[in-house]
Image (cartoon, rainbow, N blue to C red; front, side, top):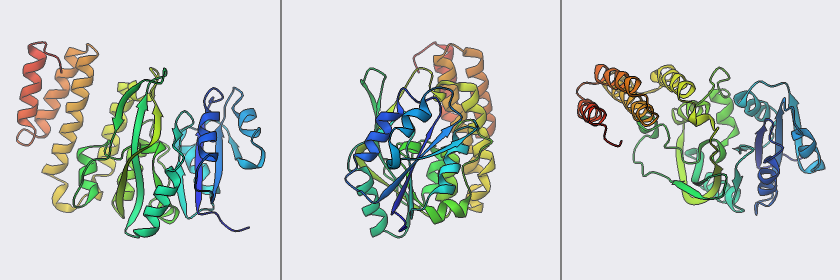
Amino acid sequence: MQSPAVSVVVPAYNAAWCVRKAIDSVLAQSFRDFELLAVDDGSTDDTFAVLSSYGRSVRVIRQSNRGLSSARNAGIRESRGRFVAFLDADDWWMPTKLQRQVDLLQSRPEIGFVSTTARVEGSDGRLLNMWSCTPCSGPFLPRLFGANGDVAGSGSAVMARRELLDRVGGFDESLRSLEDVDMWMRLAAVTGYACIDEPLVVILKRPDSMSRNLEVMKKASVQVMKKNRHLLPAGMQGAYWRKCMAGVHADFAKWRYREGQRLAALREVVTLLALSPIGQGRLGAGLLRDIALSRRI
């Protein structure tokens, strides 16, 4: 059997309520040379039944519940395409998404992974924000350390060359969050990145989304920044890395403050200032002032 150009990997856990929309958006793509692999990660609802209802259009992989990274890795292992595209079960694509990304990767061999601008919507369909491409000149990896969210759309927007995914290893199954950022850092260390500035992905933001669990995100953020520090050029592993790490603590200071955790927010600022008193000193001083004066951050 001839291998497809693209393997689409959809991890799904208790996703019977939403996965049909994701699957339908893949099957509606204008680009047709793809295989669709859905990984049922030990669901206890009707996810397997929904996926099985598509017959031969969807190759269903079942495993015991081992988490998002494990499910994505299972899909990668079974994939046969030159490119692999990821889509979370509660998100969906616009019809030209695959075509636009395949065209870019085929025309630019120096690019190893590509994403697109994404619409972020609430459960009611209301537009919350646009996760847009950010201009970037020069190597992308240092920028990604400074702004972890700079791969627009992230886990539901990225298409990567399969050979590079094999080269850098799978998603880190020890991480409970930011496993996508960890992967993009490792890819950015060996290849180029591009972003298509068109809203070709829709991301659903729910109140119980993992991104709202601050403790899980904080632990994963620090872990990802530390484990990948060695990927930076030697001259950026000192003051630059500390400045980037301080920026992570600044973000968590803001989020904790908005959640009413004033003391925890102050501790984040103190850590920020200890890490990078020169590079992020002005930012830290501003946060201290705003927290002390109960200003909106």
